[in-house]
Image (cartoon, rainbow, N blue to C red):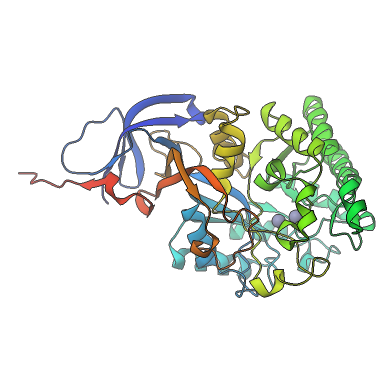
Amino acid sequence: MSRILLQGGRVIDPSQHVDRVTNLLIDDGKIAAYDAQPTGEETVVDASGKIVSPGLIDMHVHLRQPGREEDETIATGTAAALAGGFTSIACIPNTEPPIDTQANVAFVLDQAAKADNCNVFVVACVSRGREGKELAEIGQLVQAGAVAFSDDGAPVYDPELMRRAFEYCQMFGKPILNHAEVRELTTGGVMHEGLVCLVLGLSGMPAEAEDVMTSRDISLAEATGGHIHLMHVSSAGSVDMIRRAKVRGVHVTTEVCPHHFTLTDECLRTFDSKFKMSPPLRGQRHVDACVAGLVDGTIDVICTDHAPHAAEKKMEPLDRAPFGIVGLETALGLVVTKLVEPGHLDWSTAIEKMTINPAKILDLDKGTLQVGADADVTVIDPDVRWVVDATNFCSRSRNTPFDGWSLRGRGNVVIVGGQIKHVVDKHVIDKRVVDSK
Ligand SMILES: [Zn+2]
Ligand SMILES: [Zn+2]
């Protein structure tokens, strides 16, 4: 396998507290050496002025296949991941059929291998058929390769089922990823319940719908010793509860999506369904709480909740259009533009939340540039300004509220297992193979 020398980049690897300009050598698919010098036998990537980061990980992606290939496929979703700078993703099992059997896990892994883009890790269903009635075969699914369990798209509703799920998943050291929402409080809702909602005359989804379920999940995790990972946190109340639970030593982790630290419910004044997601965009107070949670470490992970929907579905009127937006190809730019540039997070902390933290939660051998680790690397251009053009997305769907936005920062060279999989700026790569005598 080929050798690649990443020359003169600022290597930031929070897993080893590394932040310095150096040369990094990749050999035979692994991180081979720091401070390496060119020998003339490797592909040289000029990384000067760039950040060399462990390959980014998105632990919350809806790939839609099987069943909804008109929205996304495993091939197009993983291509979108590479275009966004991600080398690994975890896919959520609310497909049709849902990923609740060993055969379905194998199908996803097989399609991902065929696509040969980024690494794909499978999250399997908590309940059989995602029906929330009986537990899926947790042990068998772990054997097939499932890294976590979730009924996302919907919460695990029955608290008794959730309690048993914690007990089972704990035996295998796996987290439960829950979508925290009390449905009785959100029935018919299209946006956050607040002043804007009242003015627009739309039906609301109050923050308490999230808070009450977050509280239940923390209680059950605390009682069982299980690991709850709260998905797409969006409310000030939830961030506060998670912060306090962490202090008590509860095994709770959480994630936030770029739209929830970037946009507010004011966007719904356009009545554009590209601003419709679940949980909904909330008021500024909640956005500020999410940013504060990122800053003080309450929020461990930044993920996308990439939720592709074909154009004809999102064209429906607001009350009928589906929830969710695509996120893989805009996430890094939003993190840089909205968190790093304004000084909320330094580079190391931002990268930590997109590499080693999700790797630890899912227990993956990823997210690090330690010598001997898999050579998954994202070379980030931290300064480049670019304009989001959804027509150029690799994703099959275009449902983004960020089309036309000017963002800073982008993955420039994306390396998976020692192979260059995606390049924006081709001139940084110079293959200089000389006679080895
Ligand atoms: Zn969800
Ligand atoms: Zn989701």
